[in-house]
Length: 481
Image 1 (tube, rainbow, N blue to C red):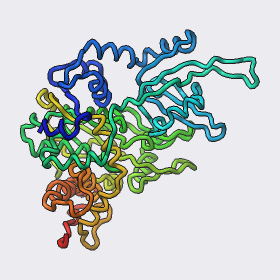
Image 2: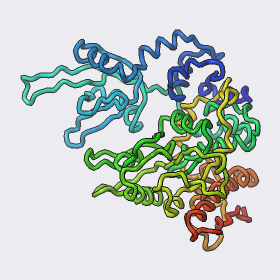
Image 3: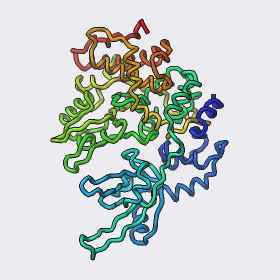
Image 4: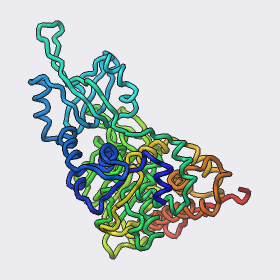
């Protein structure tokens, strides 16, 4: 399969050796950034010079503690400084002034500018997303206190190079899927996530449980709950694989941080990410439980939210991640008892589409770490991000599935949404219904989607007698397909 992978994807494949090398682990780099660096410095056999990479990192990947030193060089010593960073661009509607911020270093748009000729040169890349990773070059505009109005000193953008080393061609990716069987493709996906497919002892159950974690990466507003034992890699996958997501671990979560801050007039995490994962949810406290519950119920239902006079919509999913004791690893027990009180209401839990049984995923060990050729994580996550916009898969699911009369709307929507995510993840090559292999669709998409929703339904019956004994509707594939 490795030969087939390298032949099909060529430049999008990178050699990852996480079993033997602790070099990148010590740097605490997200996997998408690590793979970019590996691609830049590895030869065709996957070998790289550690000293060369280390030199690059010291030069172009400054720590937050280095920011004062960087400002000194730019502002006081009038040097131009180049490094790799995440950048956010903003355009002032009233003045047409173009500014930027570096959120990782606390540099705000009030302190910066992008001159018009620089903007014209790099705008196509800078407007491609709210947050863009790239090699930025910074300089300084001197203040002029004699000018009227007074000219303030600002840090300015000199140049920008997108750090993506490939072209994410979605149609090419879809066609390449045709070269692999379903089980081979699952192994490809696991490698892209930094996992060794051969390291799973109970390969069928464990691999399929693992890829469930990718569903909210690829489908808009997919809301899931995962409870798992410690050490199964939840935080790593949901927080460090993709640049398009946000993982919040413990602490206090407010409506302002999650949705909209009235005082600062800034959008929250929901508006700027593909999903927001609340990790270690048992340890999260909410500044106002009733306020947060109301905001979550509205958003999870419709994708819209209102804070004061501000109304907006977003596409981010909400993921709850928590640890569970061995005594409660059973869908017929009250698994949500240890969750914060905000999630003890059935009307809120009903709005989560599915449940991931994290105890089916093995505790992380060395043999599960990839050691070999695999899809570049940055490339794969970019493809998943792009597939979120493709509505053709949902249209196929709607055409394929027959919904019984008087089926519960939330159950039906949840199953279809999960099913669509599975279709995108495992069968991206499908363009219409005639491309579907029915028994594969039923086995890999519809059945697991129903299973994930059924667990939510069981837990609802434990929380609220109104739901007790109620099953999900028996969605089936249409007979005339």
